[in-house]
Length: 271
Image: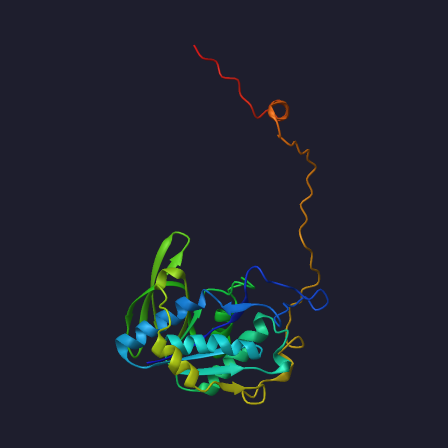
């Protein structure tokens, strides 16, 4: 069983910066990590190949620094890593990103399954996985919480829905997007890290995947961020410094008056 897992480099949640002109995320110079939800996709892929045999290929689109997450996936157990990196890819929205990834998957060739995380933490759209399935005309199962059966021809999975869970069967090849319930991700081993350091990461550009230049980057992205605003919370307040007994009593009296004014205090009668 050959499984392809698209993964993504995302900024640390405390280090997200946006370009106010293009409306795209600034990735260079930011501290980044492997999208946490992609770890569950990797673990699901590893467990399937351990149970049924086969290999896992990881692919990512991003700047030079994105090679780090490919090394991490290799250290966890992936056999092959492909880095899609080319300046024309820059600024791609989910439509253009799913197109580029689909072209790479077509170039990779024979595969049984594509597994992605439910979503990426930077965009939070959950659109790229289904987008890849659409470009490749694959059967799609989203929000997969467990895989109950896998053969050379089909797969039975349980997916998370609003009312609970739904059991579905899909013919292979197919694409799954998985949620956290699928498995607990493993940690890289020292042996795996050594193997990852010695591994070669393949680098493909737009020409290598024969991408239509009108469908990649900003030019190929039908959606635009037209305005960026930082939420501002303005509250008028009075600060009381309780640095003594009298000041403390005054602060308590003021707080009680304020709560009574807002009708947040209820009188309690003890009988």
